[in-house]
Image (cartoon, rainbow, N blue to C red; front, side, top):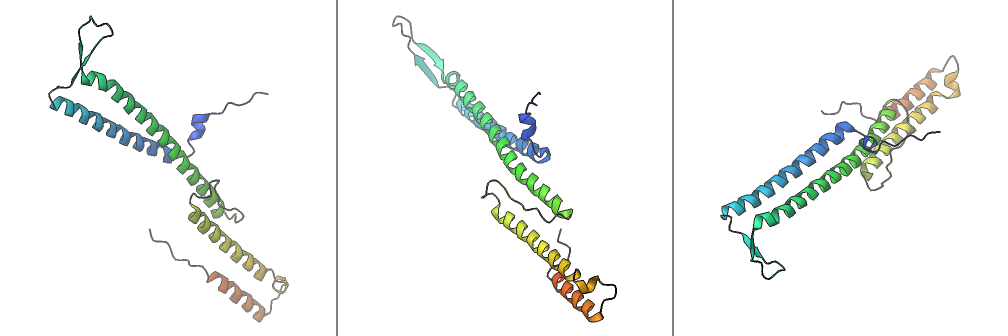
Length: 192
């Protein structure tokens, strides 16, 4: 039996619509920072009149001193450092975007289950410290709805209500109990 090869990079993007713009923005910011810093160094060098020169001596004492421009010495190192900064920023942007996207994916999946009427699910993340207040709020809200639905089910599954003819006072008591539970919730539309 053949094992399927993992598509590491493809699986890395959980929510492309969130992650790709985030990575693009991060890379744009780092690229602009790189260009500004290199431009500032080059402008300072040329503004100073290209006066930065160093003299190097060969290991052979009979050879004359070699004059090298400071920019030709510093520029390769500067470009290497900026290239490493771009690579590090790209890796950081990928990691941060995936971290955020996984959290959003789990919240989206939980909300879809809740909106379809599945009140058994709870929201949780592997990393307990991430969004702990959001997790507690969401789970307590679901627990409140779950308790209310259970109470309503108990009210309307009374044996006296399941019979064909229900005494009026029993029906009024059940409706009053159900009204008390329903009044615990607000039904106004949220502000948008």
